Length: 278
Picture 1 (cartoon, rainbow, N blue to C red):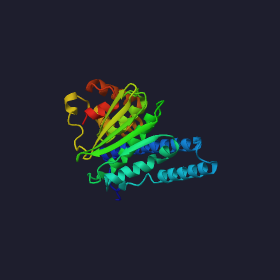
Picture 2 (cartoon, one colour; picture 1 turned 90 degrees about the vertical axis):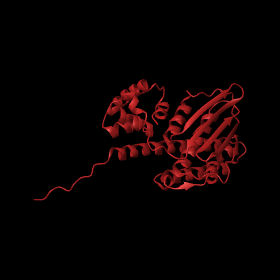
Picture 3 (tube, helix red, strand yellow; picture 1 turned 90 degrees about the horizontal axis):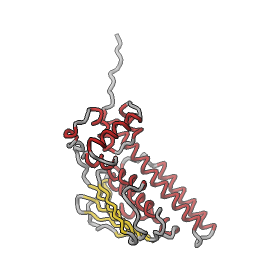
């Protein structure tokens, strides 16, 4: 008698990792395309560039964005290391159109060339975080100068970004909340400080070695098995839809569990919840 071939169900962690990876890719693409659109607008609005030059630059930017869009399946960036100086130079390339055509003075303070190489995932996330931070800062009125500084203490990549605006940016700003979620995805921390009349500053710390046991404190909170599953996915960076698909529950149920987790843990945001769970 013929029997059906054995099936090998996907382990929960595999499906959660896939969901988290999809969420990261979507977020990275959003930041990259937002930077491209800002750059295109800067080129088209520039009064110092001829029509022909602006058209050619816009074509080049769009072509580069298309190449990036089609290359998102490139997985080796999460498996290999990248020298910190090279990662920083790629960041400069990403932001160069805003510097050249947007009337924005971006000052780059380079990391030490002999600093520890960055894991590919950290290098990629760091560039995406800085792009998002710069866009968040320049959305404020009156910002004309941004200072980007990278350093490495051997265990962490240290990022400082400062503007010369009115100093009104807060952790509750929507753009900052999105950044906090991105930072939490790679087990980092984000601090925002603003001084009225003197500008805003973001300080980001990204660990180079990812913790192996992100849920060591969960047992003390009296969570149900379902809540633990939702918490793991929140800590991995997955959004509500991805969590719902992974756990085969509705998005409304996910929202209910997240609200309960925030209450039990004493957190006020998803980013804080993810940070406390590690």
